[in-house]
Image (cartoon, rainbow over all chains, first blue to last red):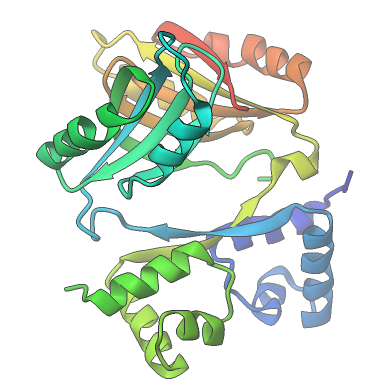
Length: 152
Length: 140
């Protein structure tokens, strides 16, 4: 496993803020030369610490004012095909993420909608029509913050 | 304010946030110049907040992620504020969400292993103020 020093941690924090910065811009902020910053980025990529990027979009500005997390339990009655459920749920455009979880519910879905009545349409016409869907619990997202984590 | 081209561009960009500008432009059917101008406009309008690196905590030895759902004692006026202040002090809590529903707060907690999670839970989380009820789920 890779060991991080203070500079690596600062570098990770900067990249979480904005992954599009050049090695020379990052180096300037950290007091490193461009090649030194670049080598550190390469090392973090090779160790798998930096693998992907995420576009942070303002859902509200895009017209999606409501985000709801749905806990979905599959019905135990009849043979439910997990593959059928997963395929169908992935095809719903308003469903942003699908997580398979252990606990009271089987899946956790992140659903966006324009407003509450739009959410009702998605829930009744799309979610409740999914093959094998059982109990559904809805929690409306009020706020969300991502923290820097133990590297901070 | 967004036209179909903006939406197409955002869809492509969201699908591959690490693509080079030329590649993104081609996928969206735009010239690199037009693509760059549209992205700049979307950033200025606050629609694109950022393009962030995602840290893979597993590669840093954090093998476990637990989703902790909490119900708060809401009769106290500062129940949320005090709870959130305490949660922000624990570095292993990587995400905090608040809800309207049966669940009030959801915390994503990362840990090196289950023993480490138990230690964080006992030494920090159990002492958070205003917890009425909680339930943990391990992400698969």
